[in-house]
Image (cartoon, rainbow, N blue to C red; front, top):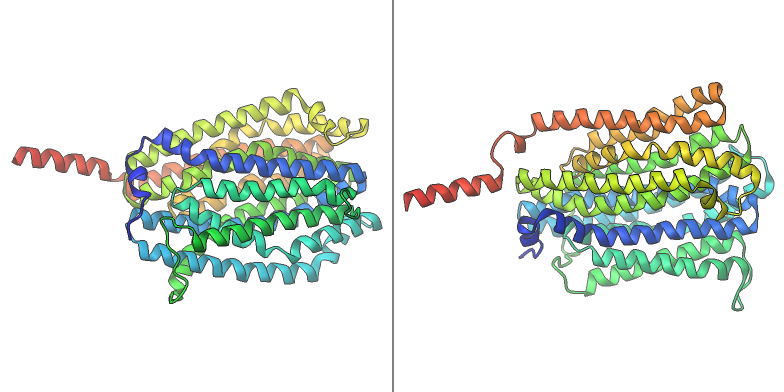
Length: 469
């Protein structure tokens, strides 16, 4: 089977290639971030308790996305490398194996989540109204979580082949449907009953299910460079293993956000429910900065993976450098936005004076950590693309668990609530330093850096043939 992506992966100039592949997912991620913000804005109009409820529910939502993206990244990394190695049959097999893993994981999450939901929320609050709202919202999300699992897996398949437009469209359609339905179902417009926080959850799952159905239809019926091969496709444990080697660390990395939120919510609730709500708002706002970077790494990962598989060191390093520069500029923009306009950002959520007193210093302090974060994120992408999932996992553990949680507890005893926000600076700075050390070790040990890359080898061969002629 001829793979149409190989020509541009091998020959197109890196910066235009990176921008062309990163722009569609960056747009779709921005739309997704817009959905996150608008969803919270509408819920904030119900009550402050409702906003706190979805802040408590956010870790479970984030866990669902983390696991689905983890499997998708494992499939993406595997397919990218096999494209570079020119092994199309293994690419076909990876699609089926990825979908099987996605379905099994979704079923497991649904069952375990519904069984443990009540005890999970009771750990954070005894307020019956917050407990009821959080439980209603999350039960609906869990019951239909297979939709993001399947949709994201298929999305990553397209991205691995260099097709970024279809994933952008799928993300955009789901998010836009969600945004349109939110006010209709929350407040009861156009003949719909006012369902409150349940309406927000229903709008979310309708958008996700729409994206899933469309992605399956496109995968099965639209002509593109990968032709599905469901049956007879032999189930190969080795392919599951190779996908999971990257998928598990990636899922753990993404799930760390959920663990971080759970841990910090447990600490913040000792100050006030309002502190929990402020942290939930911050997490939604920061998606406007981190989501475009996520789109960037979605574009960079298949380029890195392909050229690593093709042993083209020059293009691999060029992709790394360009990705870092772009991500740093995005992070700098976020830093300036949070530093200069924190009041205006918080007022989108009907912030009271008490919320502003907590939220303004929170946004300003945490935004400083955006600057070193760009280095850790991009080097983690390199490690994922080359199959070094363990190094990526370590960086994310430092960014979102090993430093933040213990240090936030310690600093909160010294500085009060601002100490929680200061811990983010130490976490991102420490992770960036560690990422640089791991990268230097990677360069010393990996075979691609120990000799001529493919492009250099081709040049040498051409020179030799010219001399012989």
